[in-house]
Image (cartoon, rainbow, N blue to C red):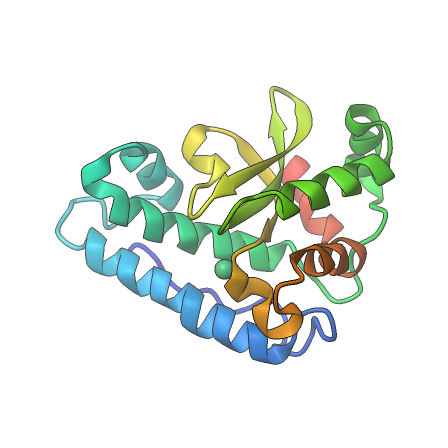
Length: 197
Ligand code: MN
């Protein structure tokens, strides 16, 4: 099997009150698991089963006949990445290398956090808000549905899932409040710094 469902890197209640155990139970245990299971079913017999997921995504991106593989492998990758972007007692101002690069590329942490929130708020329908490294500079970007920067050769440093299943149980339609809570309380800057290298 090419893909597995990784354990959450914390307890299901570790992100409360910002993300409830109930949300993580469904989001990880049902939604993420379904993407992994579907990806493995669709990959079976294609010769891609043992390939690295990032390589599969680059290979099938834009191929209409393999859109199901793309969507499920991308969602499996995005979710595994997203769990690592969160931690108990995270969020707020970063330290380390990323702090300096945010100041250099956005002007200030305040401008960065406003841009990231706005990117998530304005993604029409389902998708993802990202902090990426592109040509040596930090940028925020959004992707629709399952789409992911790794399919396009862009290096993600941080993501926030803005599909309704990420926040509806806790925030109903208040996506901006969910984004603000994640930005202020849950971002794992140690992980972001490790990605920056
Ligand atoms: Mn999700």
